[in-house]
Image 1 (cartoon, rainbow, N blue to C red):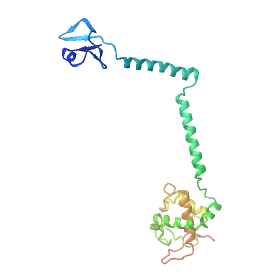
Image 2 (image 1 turned 60 degrees about the vertical axis):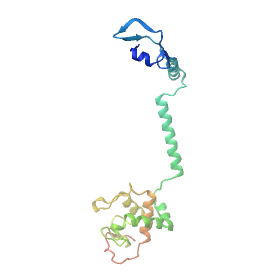
Image 3 (image 1 turned 135 degrees about the vertical axis):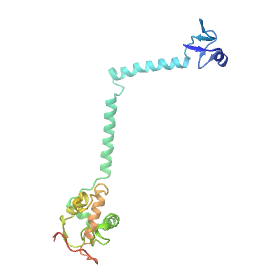
Image 4 (image 1 turned 180 degrees about the vertical axis):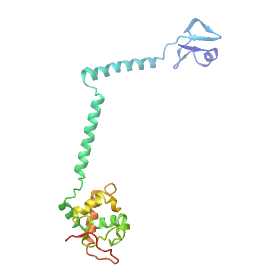
Length: 208
């Protein structure tokens, strides 16, 4: 139903896309204070759109419940999860994560480019506590053969990963990748025995 005043009757044409055919749709006797009530059909495009939606809903329901040619929400979710797992697997295969085994760390320590990369990281995040040359400031001297938490490559990597919170050593796992921590191990190994000026006294146990 749509009620139109005399002003609206003058404003809109007798036939329009919005109001349909209006010239002879007045409901007899429905006139109140100059407002006339019309019973106009909905525009054709709207009616067709309505029936298309109804037909689609029937096809959609049959497709889900009986014919199985329309995916349910659960089907879409399962397919999306499978696609995500496939992408993760492909990325992991193309970019294998570093495993800090003794053999892998030994290879890194022997790699000059990794030592150079470790030197850059050391200057950025370690030098403020351990000195520009590893001589030790707040943190221990890294150039002597004495170690507080173990002196193997794996021990050093684990300290870099987990930190020593009680001593003020932060855990770098959340800020540095495994490869960057391995490169730090390589650099620390490269400065052993350099005996820089002002080196801090030995701390920990001698590791041959």
